[in-house]
Structures are given as C-alpha cells and as structure tokens.
Image 1: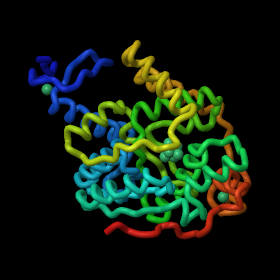
Image 2 (image 1 turned 135 degrees about the vertical axis):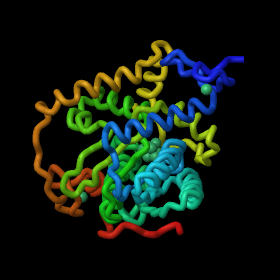
Image 3 (image 1 turned 180 degrees about the vertical axis):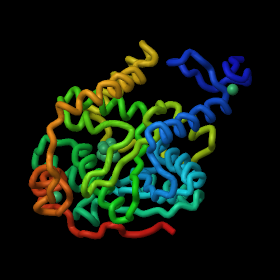
Length: 319
Ligand code: SF4
Ligand code: ZN
Ligand code: ZN
C-alpha cells in the first residue's frame, strides 16, 4: 500500500510534478490551500464585495462555486451564480439541472442567461448557419465570443464587483499556448489571475488558475460534489490538439505546465510596454464596450442577420 508522504495514511493521488503521494485528506487540504493562496496573493476578492461565479455544471465551475461559497461566507461577501445557456442540445440542458441543484444546496441565488433570448439563436442554430455559409469558423469561436460578452453583460446587470471563472492550470496554460500559436499578443497580455476593470467591463478573477485540472477533479470526487460529466459535442480542433500536446509534455516532463505558467507570469510585466494603448468606445450596433467600432459578437453575428436582441438579459432566478 502506498502511503501519503505527509501523514502516512493510504495514498490516493500521485502528484507526479512534485514527486509525492497524497491521501484524501492531504489532497483536499492542498487544493483548498492553493485556492486561498491565489485569493490572498492576487487580492482577488475584498471583504464585503458582491461576486458572481460563472457555472456551467462541469467539475471546474461547480468546484469553484463550492470553494467561493465557503470563502465568501468567511469574508462576508455575497456570492451569486450565473449560467450561460448556449443552446447545445443534449449537453447544456443536462448540466443546467446540476448547477441548480448545487446552487440550492449552497443557498446561492442562480441566474440563467441564454444565447437564444439574447442573440436570437442557439449555438446549434448558429453552427448550422456557419456550416451552410461556409464561414470557416468552428462553433467554439462563436461560443467563446458570445459567452464572454453575455457573462459581462449579466455581471454588469447584476451589479457585481467581480466575475469569477473556473479556469484551472491546464486551461490557462492552453490559453497561453494558443495565443502563441495564433500570435495574438493582446489576448496573451490579458491572461492572468485577474483582469482589471475597464469602463463597461466587470473585473474577472480566476481562483483555480494554479490548480491542475486533475486535482480539481480529484477534489470534487473526494468531496462528493455533484458535477456534469458530459463532453460538449463541438469540442475539438486546435484547443484539443494543444491540450493533448501539453498532456504529453507533462507525462514526459512532469511540472512543464507550472513552468510555462511561471515563465508567462514573469514575462507579463515586461510585455506591458509592447501592448498598444487603446480607447474603449460603444459598439455602434449593440452598445457594448469595444476597442473598434463594432464588438466581436456583432461582427460574427451580422452575417446571419442576428445580434443583440435586448438590453436586459437576466431572464430568471432558479429560486
Ligand atoms: Fe462552447 Fe466549444 Fe466549449 Fe462547446 S467546447 S461549450 S462550443 S467553447
Ligand atoms: Zn495525508
Ligand atoms: Zn455589438
């Protein structure tokens, strides 16, 4: 029987990048400590703030909601949950009920916003239109842009001070690599544990950024947190290729993911000089903040005759 390197109990997890085995209690404690460390080190939430957490129902977002609920209670903050319903049949409809169940369990107010009600079409419909029109863009491109915009609108409407997403170490390192591959300097520069406020944008925080995906999954499992295990039918493309590449790299060279993150964090302050300052203005179609005359959502959707349908997007509470 393998023993925990910290307390000698039965080990359940091999933390290869650190060369140690951990028991159930020690891995739980370690994940919670890393979460608290990120919250403290980067001052992600201040006492008394109102925080929204974006929850899809998957292991990362539901775990993030549980950790934030505990943190907010101790710091006298208010936590609410927001779910974007992209309209992916057989996927989002199932995960939505898991979010509601968890929100109820934690006594957190939950709001749902949808692509259909806000933009006039579900992601399934947009994917079909994009295929028909041969735009060459995959559903994730539409989904990512629209979801970001919708979450920001929802957070603004709900009057929160911070919007938390559940990006873990693997997500963040994938985003760093993706922006290298695409040579997208300004998106690369915007990565980090928190993104500060700019006019019209609610500051974003990523409290799971220094926790590997596998450890979030082990934590959820050991804590008995109910999560949705489905995989989005549109998942694939370059994101998956980069994820597989990084996983292979980590298998052959443990700790690579942390090293990529550390290197990026050390470089980031030096990148500031190379990022052009830009003024924010209102999108001429929907009024959302943008650095050009038209926001990315409107740019993508106008081809299909779609766009922001209404100014108030919060549709309903789950309780
Ligand atoms: Fe959206 Fe792509 Fe994620 Fe599916 S895999 S939820 S389409 S970003
Ligand atoms: Zn132990
Ligand atoms: Zn717009």
